[in-house]
Image 1 (cartoon, one colour):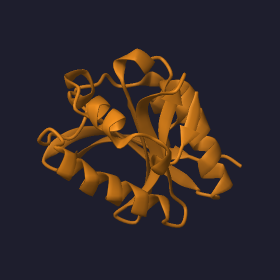
Image 2: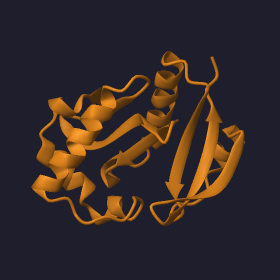
Image 3: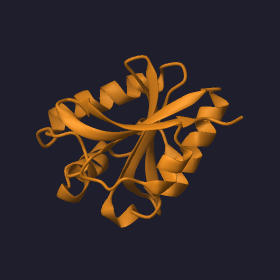
Length: 151
C-alpha cells in the first residue's frame, strides 16, 4: 500500500471509487460525481493538502487507486478522513495508524474523526477517545471521536 499525492493518480480511477454505492453509503449524501464536479472536489482536496498541518493522499495498492485519506482542517479543527473501496476494507486500521503518525509529525494535540451513523460505533476509537459524541454535519448524524495525539 502506498500513499501518493492526488496529482499522481488517474483522477477517473478515484472518481469511480467515490461513486460506488458501497462507498457512498458511509459518506455525506451528495450527487454522484460528474467529471466536472469531481474536478472541483479534487481541486479542494489539493488545496487542503497545501494547508499547514494537513495532508491528503490517494491510497494505491498494486498500482490501483482504492481510496483516499487525509488530515484536513475543518472549522479550525483537524480531522482525519479515510475512504476505502470495498476491496481495501480491512486496511482502515493500518491507514488510521499512519494518519496518527502524520498527526504526530505535525505536532497536533488532538484529531477528530467523524463517522456517519450508518457505521457501527467503534470500541477501538471509543477507548482511545477523550470524548465520543454525536454531531450533526451537513444535516446528517455522525459518531464523533476526539482522539489525543500522543508524542
